[in-house]
Length: 61
Image (cartoon, rainbow, N blue to C red; front, top):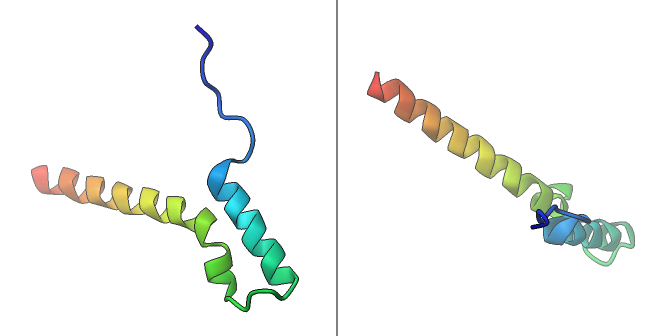
């Protein structure tokens, strides 16, 4: 069986490119934080889960 490998930039990457294009064309007047949010949200989720796992690990000791 062939392994399903991610190809392309995916949904969040596409959404980020659309938001950047709209921002640079001055169609939307959002802050850059909101424009880049689709890229930052997975990073924040990872960091939060790592913190939770770390706290649980410390509390178990």
